[in-house]
Length: 75
Image 1 (cartoon, helix red, strand yellow):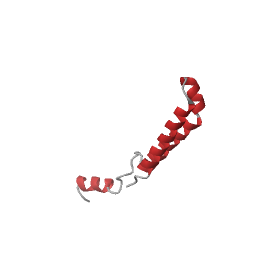
Image 2 (spheres, rainbow, N blue to C red):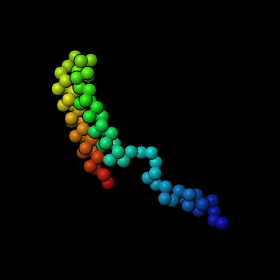
Image 3 (cartoon, rainbow, N blue to C red):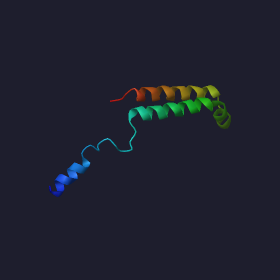
Image 4 (cartoon, helix red, strand yellow):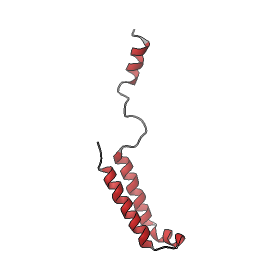
C-alpha cells in the first residue's frame, strides 16, 4: 500500500477537465440559440418595448454570429 498522498494522487489522475464547465463549442451553440430565439420573437419583443422589430432582428443576428465565432475557438 502507498501513502495517503499517493492514493489521493491516483484518485485524481485522469479526472481533469471532467467538470461541468462549458467548452467553447457548447457555449457558442447556446449563444447562437439565444440569438435565434431573439430573431424568432423579434415582433413580440418590439411590441413590448415599443421599438422596431428590425432592431431586435439585427441584435439577434449579431448575437448568433458572435456565438458562431465563440464556437469556432475550440482549443
